Image 1 (cartoon, helix red, strand yellow):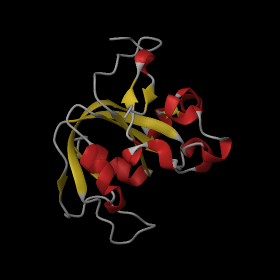
Image 2 (cartoon, one colour):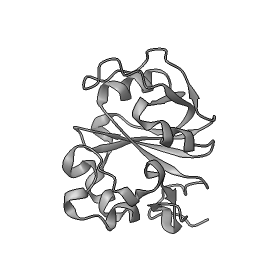
Image 3 (cartoon, helix red, strand yellow):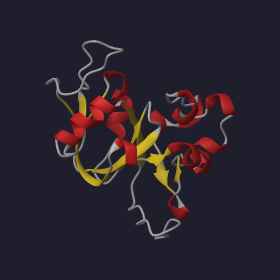
Image 4 (cartoon, helix red, strand yellow):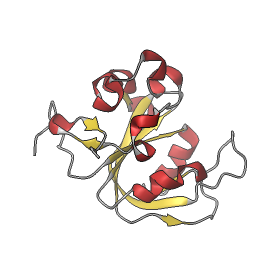
Length: 165
């Protein structure tokens, strides 16, 4: 396995998903000990593609930083118990869930600046500036050719890329 730049540990095999959310839901997940993550109701297809061993990279809107990495430990399941909330979509209950194990968890102020990383990701390099992810726009704008739900996977050097079909 190829090690990424610096002293960071290499990603294990599996896909990586960028989870975009706000500070409040991040703090809720943190209070749960990073044992559970819920995907919005609009992310059903993406959630169905998540498998044990995949990674979730947590990106916070507003602060524009990556703040955590967690490994998925279960297959997806549906649960409507209210845990997370959405100010933009009242009644959203993040029903598509997976159990997770924390790898790295940071305070929002100590997170990794997303702008330089976005430029290095194979997934975003081909995008025109108007379609760049959250660091510029505050939200992700995947292109139609991004694959099922924007699924990403590690590539040599620890970079994140789309899987080949």
